[in-house]
Amino acid sequence: MRLLFVNYEFPPIGGGAAYASFAIAREFVSLGHRIDFLTAGARGKAYSENIDGIQVHRIRTYRRGIHDSGVLGALSFLALATTKLRSLARQNRYDAYLYYFGLPTGFLSLLPGAHRGQPCVISLRGSDVPGYDPALRWQHRLLRPITRRIWLRAHRVVANSHSLRGLALSSMPEAAIDVICNGAALPTAISIRKPSGKGVRILTVSRLIARKGLDTLIMALARTQREDLSLEIAGEGPARDALMRLAVAAGVAHRVRFHGFVDHTSLAALYARADIFVLASVAESCSMALLEAMAAGLPVIATRVGGTVEVVKHESNGLLVTPTSIDELSAALETLAANPLLRERFAAANRILTREEFSWSAVARRYEAIFNELLGDRSTARSQQPPAGEH
Image (cartoon, rainbow, N blue to C red; front, side, top):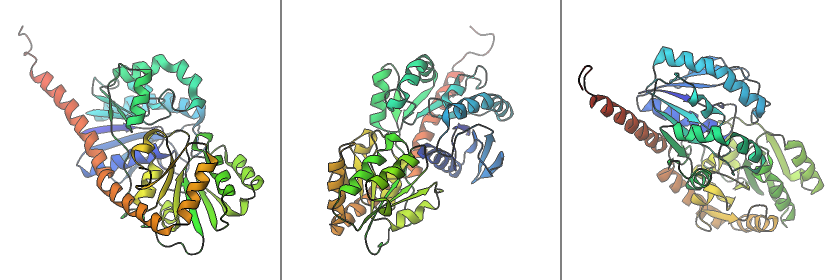
């Protein structure tokens, strides 16, 4: 098959969905398919280059930052990608298209004539689903007719967790939505955790936005009775200054390190030296950072939200706490910090779980099966049509 992947984010810009789409594209190449990838430009990156067998086409956009597209960034991508998508479609005659995010990216699936009727699959990621992020409530309300058209016109819609599927169906029950969870880089790609020496290092990897609950995590750290606990935060976002002020006000600034943007490869070192991974999100579909931490052999603490509860089983491979509960998160931190044997038990369970159930190869094959089914149905339909002139 020859496929066009479309995502307005692609490494190094964007979050988990950017790396997920890249990982799946690489797996498709390894399966023998030809993959083109249309995405936004990034500083220092060529507008056309081949990466691991993927032909990447970038267009200029006006993003606010690496982890923050902003309205202008999303709209400029749509405006400028329209011409590029039509051009690529004419040149390459793709068998099918995969769009990451129903909005903004999936809007391009509505372009008249661009796809020649070839199958389009929409991959829902979280923020593109009404009700997922309260901060986007009014945008989703305004764009509901467009969202409805994108989902219902797509040949297939895929959510990355059962929780996200349920949320999507609550706003559009007539939609047909499959579930394919994210994958995780395995220990061969991310170093297995090593002893960290003195103290217990907590790691979180996320965009610095309100939905990620980093204020709760900083306050939970401050509430613990252990001075040997330290927190490392990898990621950028508009909440950085406020979080740094919070760390100072809470008296833990000397134990909190803000790394800023860390490229995906360099994250291996942070995973390797951490002792505990925390995901304190208020809303989450299927966190790649969480899965990668688990694949790297880290015990985890996470909130009972969205697809996280499909991955983390309380007291089996991690601890689950109530979102925004400083007391519960503080107690969980103290429990794992004081019990290295429990940390190792959770870590071992996570290595096995990610190896057996969350490989990118398995994820790609599920997407491949969808495309084979869609293209097979189309081929069957064509073969059943009578020759021209027969009725």
